[in-house]
Amino acid sequence: MPSPRFDITHFSLSRHGMPVLADVSFYVDPGEIVCLLGPSGGGKSSLLRCLNRLTEPPPQTIFLDNQDVTEMDVLALRRRVGMVFQQVALFPGTVADNVAYGPGLQAESLPPEEVSRLLALADLSAELAGRDSQELSGGQAQRVALARALATEPAAMLLDEPTSALDPAGRHELLALLASLRGQVTIFLSSHILADVERVCDTIGIIREGELVLV
Image (cartoon, rainbow, N blue to C red; front, side, top):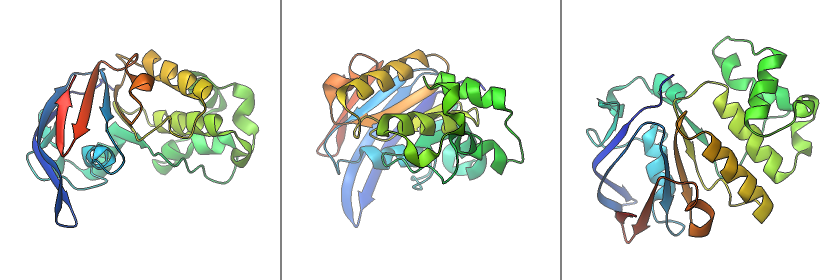
């Protein structure tokens, strides 16, 4: 599935009647890696969630390949735009069970060799396929969640604070993995650590007092 272009146009968002983001406009070319940087509660995660309508955005503010996301079938949109949450929640069962979960929802089986390919793409050994998902380290769980999201062959990925629970080595490994996907998948990630993301992102958007500034 070709990676898409996103256009965000005059996007504003309020929470409990209070403005969070005001008149945000920018675009993302296919295959780029974009980081939204800013303090907790500043609107980074809220904007990410609007990109695939986990939070409903205002109409005519977010476009995926020139199509208003609010007019798209929401399930089809989420198949194209996957998300990995800050708090990784793996399902009970094996690593392979988790990786195969998304295709299973679409009545598609995932053969063992495809599970191995996805684990390798997430920089994990195929030997982990049979391991209990609850026995993984934080870094391993984060990468399994990424492999699970990639299993549905999304054109774009949203990653909310993907490095927040990782040690420095784990952060370096995950960011190197994301960099290896440049050009194949359009990637948005949020963070509050500039040093972590500046070396892998094509564009960095700093959210400050409700406004977004691209650097």
